[in-house]
Image 1 (tube, rainbow, N blue to C red):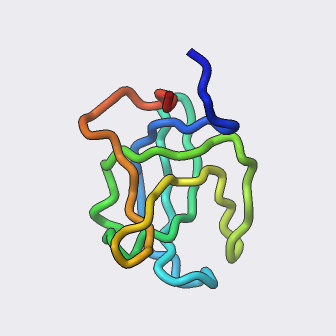
Image 2: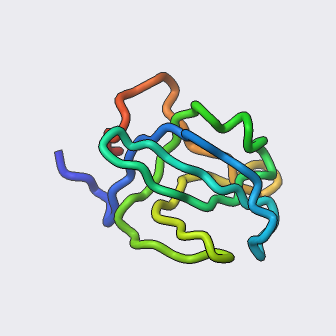
Image 3: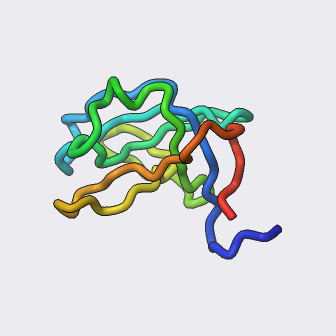
Length: 106
């Protein structure tokens, strides 16, 4: 089945997460994401609703074909997907149950 999106969104597991105070945006977190067949880095503004240490081992959704961007010297290679919470700040979008890594959203 072809994705209706102009980008590929895949399942990854957070291998490592740490606060990213050097970034200009508040509450940024550095993530290392395991997609099963590759590992990528992501910088995400998740600190409003998520503690970095609690993200490790969690499955997340991330766009993988948007290129990369440097944020305060850190190369972000995937866009971790979130939606606005009641306060307007990002809340992670995650699978309801454990699923195979690398799977594409459809």
